Image (cartoon, rainbow, N blue to C red; front, side, top):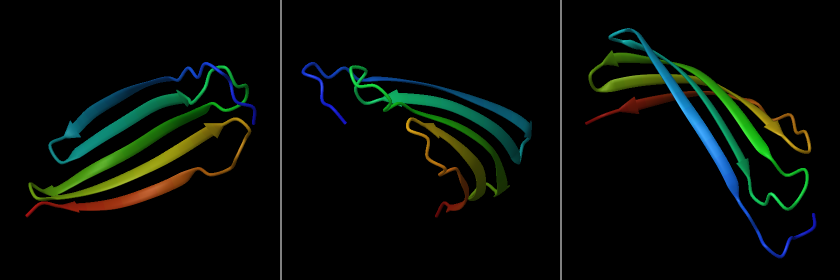
Length: 87
């Protein structure tokens, strides 16, 4: 990868949430990041889709699928399940 003299970084994102009922939250996220717009083929883009389920006010289960679009192409999409407990 070649380096540019004037490194310029670019990134953007958008989050969307929809409450289906008090215990279920749907989410979608788009984010894009280019660590140096002067260098070709180093962009990273992610789409995340998820369902969050609130078991009660202190316990949350998060299920997310993350589609990663990178240049050069790498197959590294992930499915995440997380448990959050507040105490």
